[in-house]
Length: 129
Image (tube, rainbow, N blue to C red; front, side, top):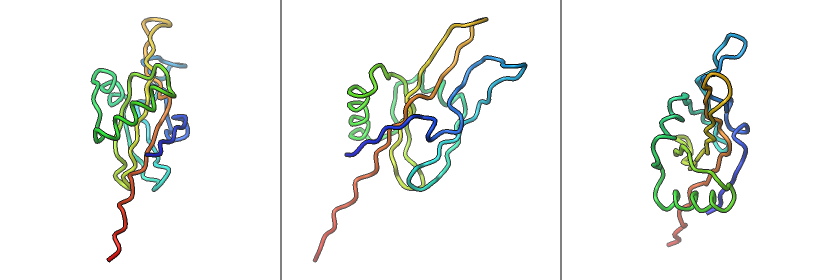
Protein backbone atom coordinates (compact mmCIF):
# COMPACT_ATOMS: atom_id res chain seq x y z
CA UNK A 1 0.00 0.00 0.00
CA UNK A 2 1.38 3.39 -0.97
CA UNK A 3 0.73 6.08 1.60
CA UNK A 4 1.25 9.76 0.83
CA UNK A 5 1.65 12.47 3.45
CA UNK A 6 0.99 16.19 2.95
CA UNK A 7 0.50 19.23 5.15
CA UNK A 8 -3.13 19.78 6.05
CA UNK A 9 -3.02 23.22 4.44
CA UNK A 10 -2.65 21.50 1.05
CA UNK A 11 -6.04 19.75 1.39
CA UNK A 12 -8.13 21.89 3.77
CA UNK A 13 -9.31 25.46 3.35
CA UNK A 14 -9.15 25.99 7.14
CA UNK A 15 -6.80 24.24 9.54
CA UNK A 16 -7.19 26.17 12.82
CA UNK A 17 -10.02 25.90 15.32
CA UNK A 18 -10.12 27.55 18.70
CA UNK A 19 -12.25 29.46 21.13
CA UNK A 20 -10.11 32.57 20.64
CA UNK A 21 -11.59 35.84 19.51
CA UNK A 22 -9.36 37.79 17.12
CA UNK A 23 -10.13 41.47 16.54
CA UNK A 24 -13.60 40.94 17.97
CA UNK A 25 -14.39 38.00 15.70
CA UNK A 26 -14.50 34.28 16.42
CA UNK A 27 -12.56 31.99 14.10
CA UNK A 28 -14.47 29.88 11.58
CA UNK A 29 -15.89 26.57 12.76
CA UNK A 30 -15.95 25.11 9.24
CA UNK A 31 -13.39 23.41 7.02
CA UNK A 32 -13.55 21.68 3.65
CA UNK A 33 -11.24 18.91 2.43
CA UNK A 34 -10.64 18.58 -1.32
CA UNK A 35 -9.69 15.12 -2.58
CA UNK A 36 -6.54 15.19 -4.73
CA UNK A 37 -7.79 12.37 -6.96
CA UNK A 38 -11.38 13.30 -7.80
CA UNK A 39 -11.70 16.85 -6.37
CA UNK A 40 -14.68 15.82 -4.21
CA UNK A 41 -15.14 18.36 -1.40
CA UNK A 42 -16.12 17.18 2.06
CA UNK A 43 -17.27 19.60 4.72
CA UNK A 44 -16.36 19.37 8.40
CA UNK A 45 -17.16 21.35 11.51
CA UNK A 46 -15.03 22.11 14.54
CA UNK A 47 -17.20 19.64 16.48
CA UNK A 48 -16.09 16.75 14.20
CA UNK A 49 -12.48 17.31 15.22
CA UNK A 50 -13.35 17.82 18.89
CA UNK A 51 -15.26 14.53 18.88
CA UNK A 52 -12.31 12.77 17.23
CA UNK A 53 -10.04 13.89 20.09
CA UNK A 54 -12.46 12.39 22.64
CA UNK A 55 -12.87 9.07 20.80
CA UNK A 56 -10.10 6.82 19.58
CA UNK A 57 -11.76 4.98 16.74
CA UNK A 58 -11.26 4.68 13.04
CA UNK A 59 -13.72 4.80 10.16
CA UNK A 60 -11.41 2.77 7.93
CA UNK A 61 -11.07 -0.96 7.31
CA UNK A 62 -8.79 -2.54 9.95
CA UNK A 63 -5.97 -3.38 7.50
CA UNK A 64 -5.83 0.20 6.17
CA UNK A 65 -6.07 1.67 9.66
CA UNK A 66 -3.17 -0.54 10.75
CA UNK A 67 -1.04 0.67 7.82
CA UNK A 68 -1.88 4.28 8.70
CA UNK A 69 -1.01 3.66 12.38
CA UNK A 70 2.34 2.16 11.39
CA UNK A 71 3.09 5.02 9.00
CA UNK A 72 2.28 7.58 11.71
CA UNK A 73 4.54 5.87 14.26
CA UNK A 74 7.42 5.89 11.78
CA UNK A 75 6.99 9.34 10.25
CA UNK A 76 4.82 11.59 12.42
CA UNK A 77 6.17 11.09 15.92
CA UNK A 78 3.67 12.05 18.59
CA UNK A 79 0.58 11.98 16.38
CA UNK A 80 -2.17 10.65 18.65
CA UNK A 81 -5.44 12.24 17.60
CA UNK A 82 -6.97 11.89 14.16
CA UNK A 83 -10.13 11.80 12.10
CA UNK A 84 -10.35 9.49 9.10
CA UNK A 85 -12.79 8.69 6.30
CA UNK A 86 -13.12 7.28 2.79
CA UNK A 87 -13.68 9.73 -0.06
CA UNK A 88 -17.20 9.15 -1.39
CA UNK A 89 -16.07 10.15 -4.87
CA UNK A 90 -13.16 7.77 -5.49
CA UNK A 91 -12.61 5.60 -2.40
CA UNK A 92 -9.36 7.24 -1.28
CA UNK A 93 -8.65 6.47 2.38
CA UNK A 94 -7.81 9.67 4.27
CA UNK A 95 -6.69 10.51 7.78
CA UNK A 96 -5.93 13.94 9.21
CA UNK A 97 -3.82 14.18 12.35
CA UNK A 98 -4.79 16.79 14.92
CA UNK A 99 -2.70 18.87 17.30
CA UNK A 100 -4.57 19.84 20.45
CA UNK A 101 -3.36 22.88 22.38
CA UNK A 102 -4.31 24.71 25.54
CA UNK A 103 -3.01 27.84 27.18
CA UNK A 104 -2.64 31.43 26.34
CA UNK A 105 -5.03 34.05 27.62
CA UNK A 106 -8.29 33.34 29.40
CA UNK A 107 -8.20 29.57 29.01
CA UNK A 108 -7.84 29.55 25.26
CA UNK A 109 -7.72 26.14 23.61
CA UNK A 110 -7.99 24.71 20.15
CA UNK A 111 -7.21 22.12 17.53
CA UNK A 112 -4.94 22.52 14.54
CA UNK A 113 -5.07 20.17 11.56
CA UNK A 114 -1.46 19.12 11.03
CA UNK A 115 -0.85 16.32 8.56
CA UNK A 116 -3.00 14.42 6.07
CA UNK A 117 -2.15 10.91 4.98
CA UNK A 118 -3.88 9.23 2.06
CA UNK A 119 -3.85 5.78 0.47
CA UNK A 120 -5.57 4.79 -2.73
CA UNK A 121 -7.55 1.56 -2.76
CA UNK A 122 -5.69 -1.33 -4.30
CA UNK A 123 -6.93 -2.05 -7.83
CA UNK A 124 -8.60 -5.39 -8.30
CA UNK A 125 -6.48 -7.91 -10.23
CA UNK A 126 -7.39 -8.34 -13.86
CA UNK A 127 -8.54 -11.83 -14.68
CA UNK A 128 -7.96 -12.94 -18.23
CA UNK A 129 -10.06 -15.84 -19.59
